Length: 527
Image 1 (tube, rainbow, N blue to C red):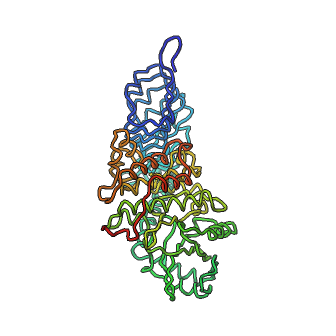
Image 2: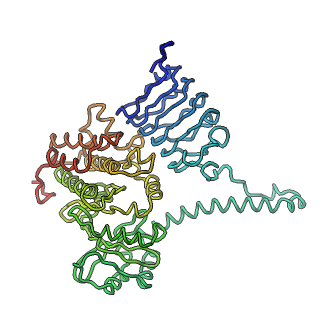
Image 3: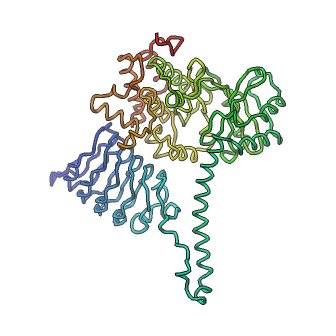
């Protein structure tokens, strides 16, 4: 938009225009610009320091892109700025102190980045609370209630000790400061140590977990089975659970430990132990589990029942010998052929489509990722953990997921609002397609070094007409026509505009009609 009198550009609104590429430094020459809105695109690279020359700028929206690098210090020269949003990017470094000089700033959001260091504690930024900074793991400051290390009082030494009279007058205050600081640091260190040591024990020895599990099961636990086709009494099941030890652990996640449970008759199950502190053990939770247990589909992991124990919930699933898709893609030496990858994508799509469109009640998964796609002995895909994200609590689940490292799967609008929809599942499924095609994790180190994730990498390749380079070089049997169709589908699924993404029902239709070809029975037969 231009001023009709001066003929100068005053507003540049290109939000949700599917833009790909760098932000041009030439924008800095628009020194009469008052509004710049580039949010909701697929822009990558740095924020041009030249934007600091747009001294009349009042609104700057850059959120929901793949911008990297630092927040330019020059933005602190935009003294007319009222709204500044750089959230949901991959920005790093510290928040520049110059932003504290923006006296007219009414809205500020730097959440969901990789920012570090101290938040300026004076001036304009002091009035914004933790919501403006959430999702940045290494920020500290009064706004988010985390004391920075350089602000902790140094311990007293003999050479610094004052006279005895002065010491008597100040001892109480000094002691309180030291105790408070020590308690804060100690708590943080204790949490970190517990997380590290707990995971170490789970994965290596599982001493704490196994002893507690055996005690819980023998201490008043009860079994609820959903299907009548299991010929076991509650007493038999509880007795079998008591025999589990560290050798039976087959997985350890953010909120659960998974055991392999082999019955005497040869049937094998997976037992997922969720600690009580992560959810509310009430009738509503039990009712939700009963609903999940009633859902049966060829491409969903079957929930057989659960066990109530004093401190945990034990969920009983069918055991799948193929392990998780994450393990197959990233942890094993064998390579999946092209037709096998297509078969897995189609199976996962059918499972998710059933949850979205056909089961009652309809379910939004909320946590689609390769570790939640399990494979049977024939490499048939089964979607797992559906419904658990909701049961474990919306706010904690989605924030924890972002911080824990599955950031690359989450839709931009979900990172901003925390509200999951069917279309956020579709976005995650599109990322899953790219992961299967490329053999790379969504937040592979090669992407992060360039300030990208797998979607940003795809957008870069598309812009440079190199889209086929995304394919795993070790993948054999690639068919160019199906590859092009699948990439087009993935691009639609990861669109920054939710309305442009297909439904999962449509995804299945496209996979069956335009992408897949008949797969041989022996997926590893190279002949």
